[in-house]
Length: 295
Image (cartoon, rainbow, N blue to C red):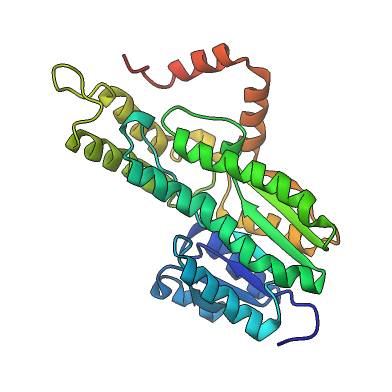
């Protein structure tokens, strides 16, 4: 076991998007990076950037424990934990099967909690550590059709706020990054989740009108189109590429005192400000201009 302070970095969800960009950036900057994903073949290219590869499933406690143990054995501690793994479960709340609800929270919330619990003892022992939770502007506001995803990001807000106070005295800093629109495969998976949730719900005879029709059909069709369209509309220029988040994470873990929050991209700053200024009824009215209200 290493005796000097470990600054080894463990990043979850590195098969694409923010996780992949962060792993590449930190490895190229000289950090010892353990990139992880459920399938090792999905992150093989990161080895060429100097990353060490780990199979890690944030819904599997044994998998998480094994990954942390590898780093503790080699370096003494996980010095930096980046809880990035996550996805969006879309669809009207009535229509999303409970199995999908649980999977959303297992991936986006419970995995981050479990890894934090596993990494903290060695961080505390060495009196230094950094925990970065990848949240979203979606933790500060809610769009219809994304309630379950937003609930997980709101959870990360609360967890990060409490944890920041609880571990500061041990030399561990907690940073929550809140990206806005980021051009990744996120939109495709979000749209697919709406379709899957609707199909599963109707197959189980839930959320049907008296005549057997789907009361959320128009809503879901528009939701899927809007989710895809926002990544193709002019508003995408107010977003950014995954490396915008990767750069922010690098800045956060490199500082002597890490920032507690980082709201990233103009789209996030503008939308969060808009939500802050609008009372609930005006916000709902604005949402009705974007989506048909189920009736």
